[in-house]
Length: 262
Ligand SMILES: C[S@@+](CC[C@H](N)C(=O)[O-])C[C@H]1O[C@@H](n2cnc3c(N)ncnc32)[C@H](O)[C@@H]1O
Image 1 (cartoon, helix red, strand yellow):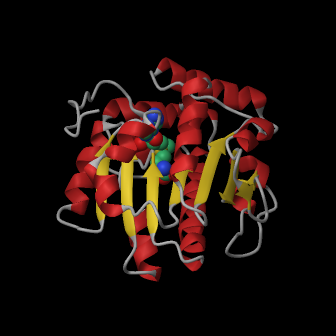
Image 2: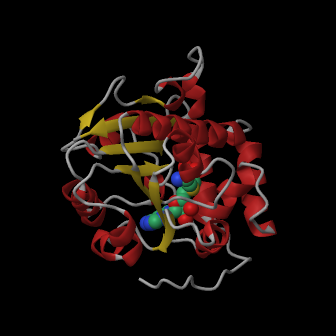
Image 3: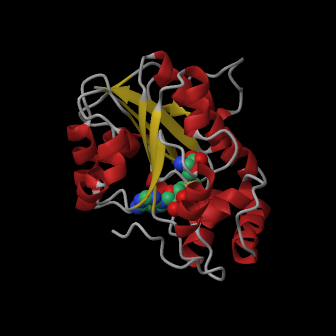
């Protein structure tokens, strides 16, 4: 794993930049915007789904800080957009430390730029499937105390990771490295009642070189093996501890979400 991001190819869409485009960000290229707008033609709610995912992330961060957690490992952190994990966490607990990890060179570049000389946060250019390397980076070793609880965030990333022993053993390694009291948060794309639409979205992402794996609740629940889901369990994203009244059409968001502790 290099700490220097590989060159950015503007002609090749990336999951990070497509997501940035869906969120209305500016760190994307025409190739990414083309995929984002095609996805929105197939599924007009998709920008709303991306926004709802960010809202879930923010609720998780506030939940974790309320439980006394002061360190976060954000795996598949994406291109920095407004209200990043460290900003939300530090609004609640100024001493919070955050390590972001992403494979995408654009995400790493912009995160470096944004974090600049922030001593409580760092970005690692790495693959979450290589936990030994991720956990051994100076950023993780320097900022995250392994004897204290950490919130491990896997938000809207595992649907870009294929099934296989690498994924299972990576999840096992992050769990093993997490002190008692730690949290694991996952959000994940799912077909819900729209198998045809979501298959078309998956096909679009696959064609653009960023394969998308939709999983059902049983499979996503397995990612929490060895952890104990906190209330309300693994649910449709908007229904996880909503800030206001729960939405009545949560299925429309095609997202499963849960948080577990150990
Ligand atoms: C849809 S974005 C989600 C960003 C952020 N977690 C959020 O929810 O706002 C998915 C991110 O996961 C990253 N990613 C995909 N596979 C990864 C892997 N194996 N290791 C680390 N990052 C990965 C992509 O580069 C992308 O930035």
